[in-house]
Length: 217
Figure 1 (spheres, rainbow, N blue to C red):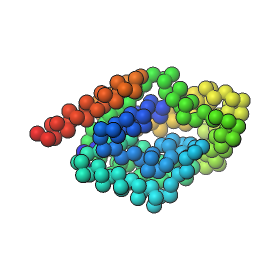
Figure 2 (figure 1 turned 135 degrees about the vertical axis):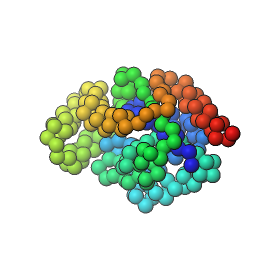
Figure 3 (figure 1 turned 90 degrees about the vertical axis):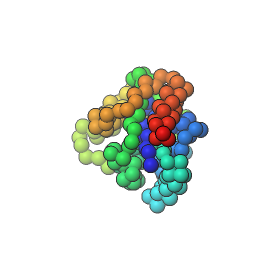
Figure 4 (figure 1 turned 30 degrees about the vertical axis):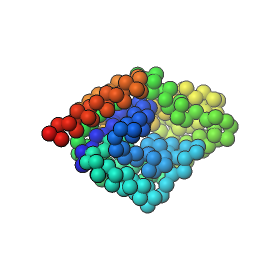
């Protein structure tokens, strides 16, 4: 099966692109199957993360449908997904070598931070307490002093409703190292600068169709 992988930093809009591509292509949506986000905060607010067994069951349903078409589009999530409690991703999608084409999605830094804000901004005091509790759980699962101090600072900023500054710190200290490590390992076949979702989807859609055309020949 041909695998088109979406790679890039957290907040660059990979998930939005993936879900638009579902209208025209077989997609394996790892986040949807896990019912969690591919980030350290995992099943935030309305999401309830699935068990490993439930996750694999949902995942293999989507894989089976994609295999019938001979290809799929998937967002690279690494070897595990979820918050404090991680779900293991099957080798098919965990191993970078299994991706036939690698599509790197990038965006302006301000767009990235605004997307993070849209994802995580609590709508009320109840959600604010949930957000803080996620960082407290995360803190309890880590040991590095520098990261522990960062999480304390993030919690302090959330308590003061300084969400923009909290998002900056989350991106810089918690996300950046992880996604840059992956980006450095790949040689992208396509780079998409995602400022406009519709344009980005069109570029990726045309790329996929062009590659499949060569296969059909």
